[in-house]
Length: 217
Image (cartoon, rainbow, N blue to C red; front, side, top):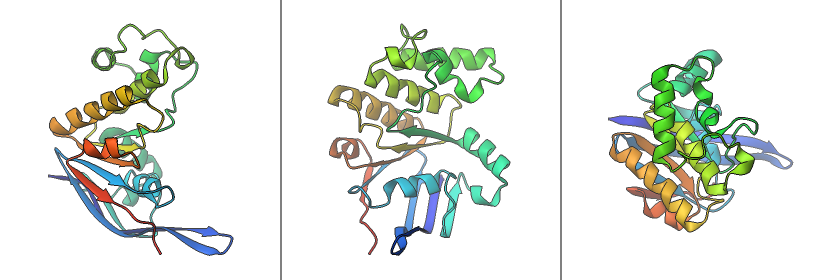
């Protein structure tokens, strides 16, 4: 089953000298059970591609389908609900809430109405990622690796079908990078889909498929 389909995707931005083509005519699919890495140098459009794939950045051309549906045909409110249901995001900058502890940061997608099952899942994810004894700590009390593992647990809380990861190992040492990549690989093996963009060869080694992305002319 194809969980992410990008068809002839293009996105440009206006620069001082005119249009800058960040992504040009990219076609890509990621199926359930696949971990796909997109490699490329800085400025080649990897993050733009990921944001467009996740329903966060409207493309200029082409089509995005997640679990068979084009999120850009939904209203902004419906699109936000769609993302929350189907997609987990992991970024190089962890985007943790500084005044919330680890448990509440993991629970951020559900803080408005936390059920018992949701709380149990958050605790299980924390234990899975070695955070069981850090639940009461705020981000400033965590190591860099612990912050990224907290962000990954948050991304998986709602049992998404697709995880989009933007340079998730960029700030990590090798041991913590391997822990995050192994967790993403486990998610794919369990039937999810992962699209990771990176310039890190170690990250690409964990993927089933690795694609080189070049800067548009």
